[in-house]
Length: 304
Ligand code: DON
Image (tube, rainbow, N blue to C red; front, side, top):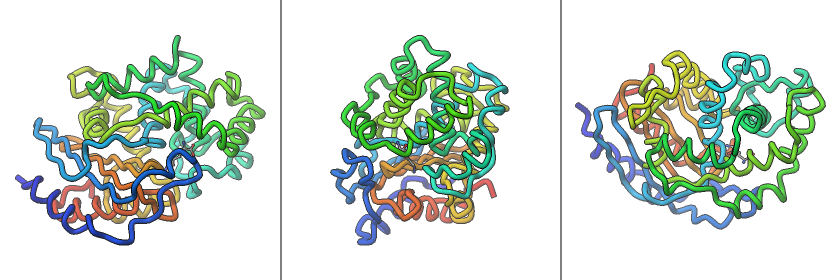
């Protein structure tokens, strides 16, 4: 059995004083105040053990990581018909690019780019009685932690500056791929992205993807087949135009967010969340990717 604690300690020692940490996201003004020095890791093993190092207990904006959670809630509600409205192919483009959306008649390449996640948000707005509260309760239940909440300032900040997401939603609407009002769907989407969680809460919430759809509290939220498919989408699309690089360096399904978080997992083994707010030029956590590369190299635990 791998000594996970000493592996995490080693990675932390190797990277904590790294000078080149990338740039904190500033296109959402409220995110630009975060100290780039933060760095934390939390690992939840499927045998019940957990391991942690650094700022694992500090909450941050999960941003695009929320797209996996919204997809996992929408899939059982809308069933396989969802794949007529959003595809499952990597885009090879940045997360907010719109050119393919027009070329492909309003069908987003996958549910993890912004346009795809906006379609998923539309599904949730249609199917949930109180979309924001119901989604929040779902995430709290998955993580088994009622303290998780939205950051309303971050949601408002993105609403003021989210011109590209408004463009995406309007394009989707023009192609009849949005049932609800643009403003209502984006209000939900900006809130889901503003969720604040720490590395422990993220590892716990993502546990069901490592456990064939069964959550930490032993509740079956997804069929094993749907959990498998969501993992496949994370592997191929979770890092946008860097999905190939993440598979190449790390070799696990995962999802990043511009708040600097990355969650990754190996089915039947573990979930792992890393947070370092500085991003590389593709919008993924610079140290986070390096930490996970070191992790799978040291432990030899990857899907490859
Ligand atoms: O819609 C946006 O641009 C943000 N709320 C989320 C983008 C994001 O996290 C991309 N991930 N690396």
